[in-house]
Image 1 (cartoon, rainbow, N blue to C red):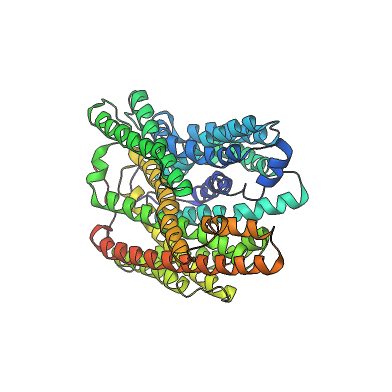
Image 2: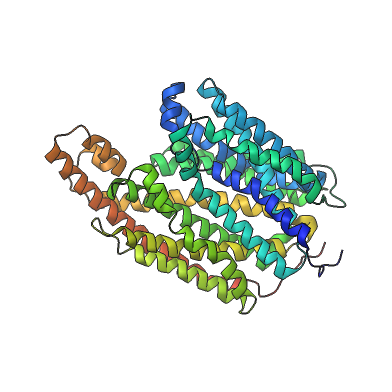
Length: 498
């Protein structure tokens, strides 16, 4: 097939089919935010089990992305997508009707397996269906918008279901989409697998899992609980396994990842930009959620609804980036998008306890719009810089870097924010106040009115200061990345030789 062949109506309809699993998988990251209190009351979930219910999905998904991307290249991306849809649907039913925490954790783990098969398959199939660079840019802009939309819609959709149904409905909502995918995928989606994929590298798969899982777990533990020996040991162990994985890829007859991809500056530079963008987006989201609920005093559902306001800007950001990249040097567009996102952080440095809600929404909107533009452009650069045979593994590497970026955003910006928060407290602050705004709010609920208001006023002031501080750091980071992007972002599509 010629690389200049243009996609027709069937391919664009197929893109809508691919949006189904992408939307559901991205929503599943955040859909549990409101369901946990109901689950805890029904199943008797402990604090540790609650953390595992939240985290096991992301851990398994991140750990298996590289494996599933490579597997799809070998057995067929449509086949893997269908397998993932079946696994995701069955696990959703199991989660909805779980009778105890252990069953729910196991079901969430299987959901992670399904998610790991679905995400790289969707992006790799786009590479197979859209050979024309301009059409592929539009398709990937749509892909990026759907992914971001799913993450934003998850809490709102979950809150709506919980107001009308029991907690299992947040999982059963996945079933119609997966059934529709199973019906339409064989008809509309092409099958594709690498012509000479070779034998699957089982040892490489184990090494990739042993590298990714300990590192992400360690980073999240350090972010949540501070310095401790076990998370540091886990990170070091993961790095060791990472070195062994790279060595395995150098010597294996049929490697999971072609290391030559990383010598392409367009590919490696775009991976770095994607990681930084995810770091900034996720790191800020943690602070924005707490500000809306605990400083502005909004209910969780109202906070989730207001957090959708920036999506009105984000919806147009990805197509705008694609249109600009056709007329202006892609490097300048990517750098400009980082500067736009940095401008959002600059607005957030002006947020105060008594600020209008509009201030944080404008800042968050600029930040999200800029970063969605970045992610759309770098995703297209990553997929477009490799041959179709390598699209699955390239997509998996990109999404793994996104998982690392999200974990680092919570850890790095979270740690800086915690330090700034505590620095703003009086030296005799009580323990709950020093632990953070959520702990202070919980303690205030058991105090007399005057003491509670004084405690909350101090905590809110310190938290807002921490938000301003991480916004300064974020703005500097994004401007620095914008400068670096000029050296790495491609101006034309570069396809690696096979």
